[in-house]
Length: 334
Image: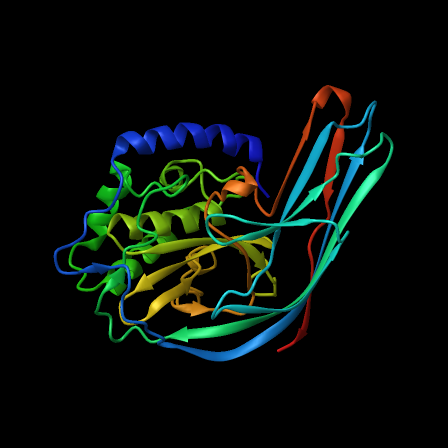
């Protein structure tokens, strides 16, 4: 879904900008931050769906030689409470190393260094995943919030002056964090123009004239929230497209959840909720079409890519193509 090299080079520049823009949010005096707030579970499971998923990657060496070193990292779908549970997972080939990143995402790392010219290597992963539909009660929006997921990072530029100013403006007159986040969500739906960009450009870029896709919608919601010390997480995953969602997004999708006092982590999808018709459906409601693959706007293992990344060297000895087939997602039951 994303051009990893564009994101890597832009990443170095963005990191330097963050270092000089001032890190951290300025906590409002009315809310205390805590690393261990009182646990809350104000969500209700309305139902669930079970899916089978198939992922296939083919690496072909067009020669003339074979690489001295070659590795492929593939993000693995995991249990994410309360959103989803992995019922089964089969990975081929079986010779891989399990790698975990700073967000807790897991990857299968394959070493394909012995890859002769003219041959292909195939990776296939099959899952069965149960995804819950969750509704949230935001009526008691008060209490402490954890001091996590409130800092700026690559593509979530919550310390950027433009982001901070906009969040402050939208927060005026809002009595609770829930009201603030709803104001951010509505602004994104009303003001952003959906355009598939092919790369993730981040929250600040979403405010410019280029248009935005799901990655910018989710990044902007997270950045606006974090700038006001409201914890927010960014997810990339898969969307099971149906008649009502097929015109609105692609199967590879991004969304967010926000920590709201009295409720905990609350799922929302500003991309699917950009229409006034669907606005309520995707605020504080985790629909069971959403399958999480990774957390974080730029996990270190992926090096700026989404779902998988591939490296080999020396490049002059081999020319290796990676073909990622479209995900196969089938609904088993609901």
